[in-house]
Length: 186
Image (tube, rainbow, N blue to C red; front, side, top):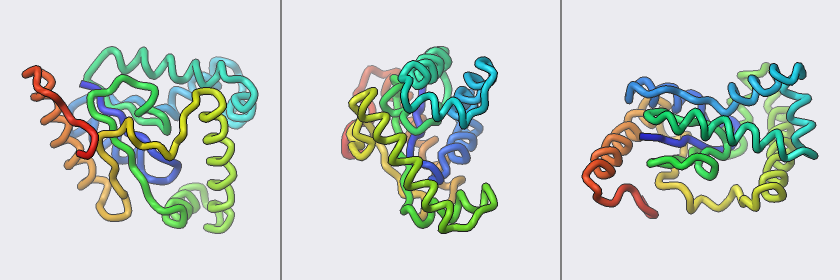
């Protein structure tokens, strides 16, 4: 069983994915950690890898390939901004939150003013989303690959992880029985 957790910066992907992996007893695969491994292997910083990726699609493709390899081992929760598109998951979840909420969360995490965090988010997402469109033809605003879309401002990370765990267990039972799993509109 593979569960993909995706969404923009600051929605709580990592927190929810870690909690979900604990609830299910699955491995946790972080796109950020895989990206850091790539940077370390190349002997450069994550920031440098990000800048290089703007002009070199091979870096994003290496990240995607590595995530797919890890996910193919089964029973895992894969977390990254594009996991719903890049990983053949049994359950795909998109987490969302308003920009101002995400700016507050990231500002607290990195110790900067909310206005600066908001500006950074806008610029980073513009760059990344443009890159995803150019390299993959992905429109990040198109959520049709996802079975579930959750606004993280409404519930705690723990409550979201519990709800998604219940959905994942149901999807696993349905998959094992040959019945149809989660579909659009769930």
